[in-house]
Length: 203
Picture 1 (cartoon, one colour):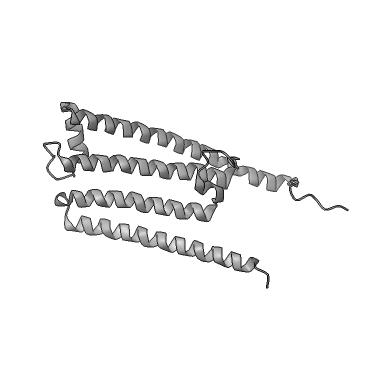
Picture 2: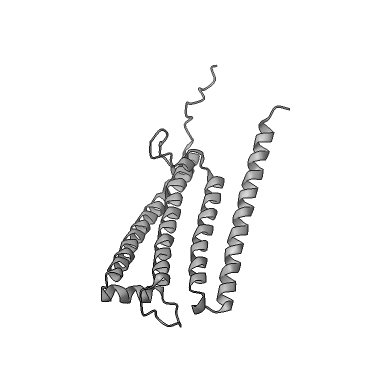
């Protein structure tokens, strides 16, 4: 009897086929994240519009910007200075980085856990998607979270006079925990990859 061709798919029995098909239950989750991405895009343009309006002297935009960067319990800024602009811009960068994180989860998660997107050879295929798996995706998500935490910590340092020392120390400690966790995840992934490569080498 001839062996089955390597690229020939074997028909699954009903129970394994049903269990395997359950992966499509994740599709509404990824569609929901796309809607969340739309909300972030809308929020980005609202903040950018108010920043431009504040720069040209619009009173309503100035009021919105001042309350957006104000720290609870601290005095609300009264003029549009470099620090206020920087805090607003960092907020916009924060939105962009969270949107990047959403794209990685949506595209990478769908490709890894639901179905192939067949983007090989597409000019816009993300570089990281060509070798994505659950471990790579986890590492990239951890790095994205560290980047987002860095933006929040930078915003705190710029506006340090409005925060207590306990808050600054707590945020710094949380960022360090994120950073160490990312290093540990990357090291573990590298260790597992090397172990797999060594196991495949002929003895």
